[in-house]
Image (cartoon, rainbow, N blue to C red; front, side, top):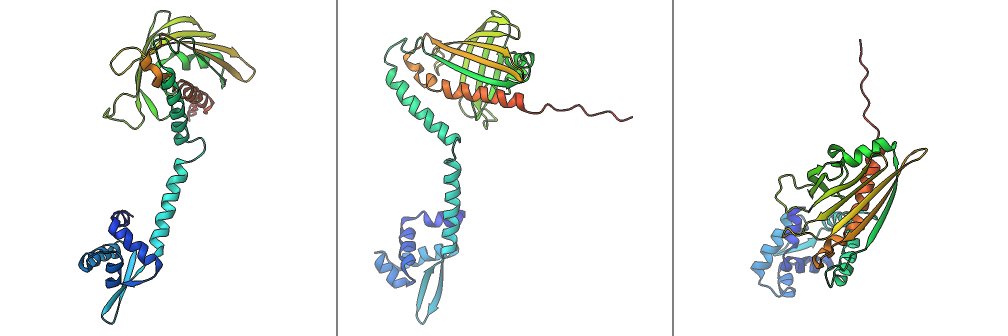
Length: 280
């Protein structure tokens, strides 16, 4: 496949492929139709033949080339699979496009300091597990790290001191950035404000701009309510202190925080590992 792509990437060879798609042709005719010198045309045809996309046979004093459609169909099928993967409903590309639309709108709205103050977002999830288990996933760093990032990201630094006045640090990177070669995808710092164990958790968290300043302050309140099948979680996310440069961050709140909560729901719904029975 690599040899085929390299062969087709040259415009002169691509022109020859188009000519051979119409019918088999000898070298001299191909050179004339392609408006190229015959030695150059011969070299291009030899490259295409090595890549398997054309075949040739001698007929008297002429060498006639013909197109082999099989490799092109295989390439077309591979390209189609790539397009289908990128275009799958609810997939990463759809999320990318949604964020792009939101990004454009928020950048247009960010005309002055305080432009997003008072904006709020509400999230609700019905979670498996009792409130005490959900509470642990909201407050223990080892459990928080499993879900507190949007899709395709990983927690690279996390501090969460679950007491009033306790410090919060959340930093995340691309999930595939194992060695830190890519810039940090996001970092926020804040403080826990209110703790009512198993019932309510409030904190404020400020995403940091590339230069180190704060983009805005998020005031987040999470309320837990027991149900017959688990726990209902209601989240209020409210913005203050917004700067003009915060548009890129505000644009991602609904998508990113929603994805994080979906990961929390999936984590809690996953079967717990069972302890092996001892054999005596």
